[in-house]
Image 1: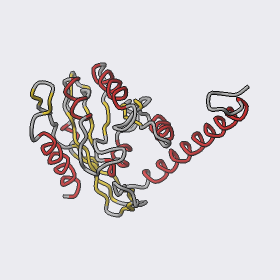
Image 2 (image 1 turned 120 degrees about the vertical axis):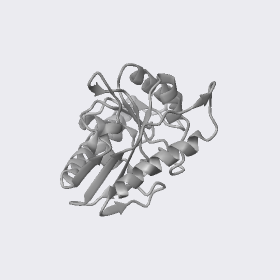
Image 3 (image 1 turned 135 degrees about the vertical axis):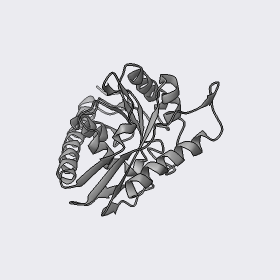
Length: 228
């Protein structure tokens, strides 16, 4: 018997099993690496009062953080059941499993280049159901610090605010990637901030002029708060 790809079913099954083992091992290693590193940080969280509260509990919001600065914010918001968006590219399943181990909801799947509409609809549904979501508006492939439309659309359709988040570290590694991904070093002083809530303005179904620049300014302000 051969499968749709022209390979014997046994061969395809063996390759699928090998991929599954690789994903499982890499996600487990990634989870423990984050745990081991983050627990050494001297962490400060600022601006928590900027997260809206309803009836004594956190209201659903869209958390917005630049792709290159997301590691420490992810750590501070673990075990809160927030839903993120994981790409359908090769590393998406690994990231999804790490997030779930950190207490995030099973991620929506998609990106600006693949499965984006389906992923966005899943996030909007989660917001309407009372769950907060997390967005890297310049991810997964950039350009760096240029927001894509999804973060605005999700907040607008669900009727919630965007809460910018950022971080700054006293000592940090930067990967040689498009986003200069920041990894705070062991025992670094790390400040994670929540900026002032941002409500995107629309003209009908179109994002109003200047809203991209306003969000960039709000996220820059959150980063400045972390650096201060």
